[in-house]
Image (cartoon, rainbow, N blue to C red; front, side, top):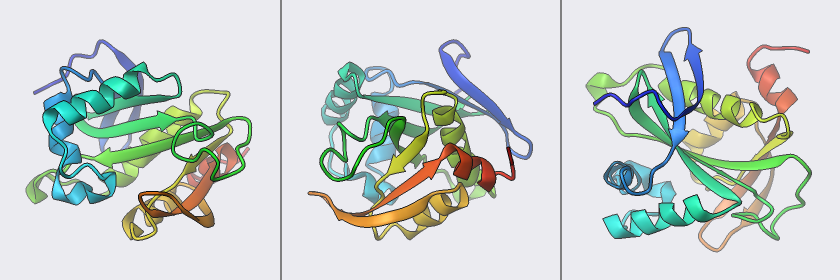
Length: 195
């Protein structure tokens, strides 16, 4: 199934893997897609394993209605391939757990599970690069702040590859997490861009 190009909010081309685009989540029409992604066993760190379709619809309706949190579907060559959540970390996820700075933005991302025969080498790295470019496309964003589970070693490696550094271990109600930050300059340096 190929997505229509209308509603595309951001796009970039990876020289090896092709076109990546981002559009807003529609909580109604995307509910089955999202449910399949967030309840998949490999999405355990998303913490929605037992969620029903109505649970997912409510969750993403709430995000769509929030002024400090939004969600996007990422497309690869026109097909849904990943989920992005962008949030104000001073109000969502990290409220009271860190010292916010002007220009902070928070994010989560989830790559859809695909059969091993269709996996592309470097795909997840291309996805997180797309996410970071989307976030830094907003000139008001100075720093991306994340809080991955301390046990999620795969995402720590990806974060480091795009410039994040761990600031400290924090305790959240649902997990122990590594508060990590990446400034615009740190991201550009990770991409081999100097200013």
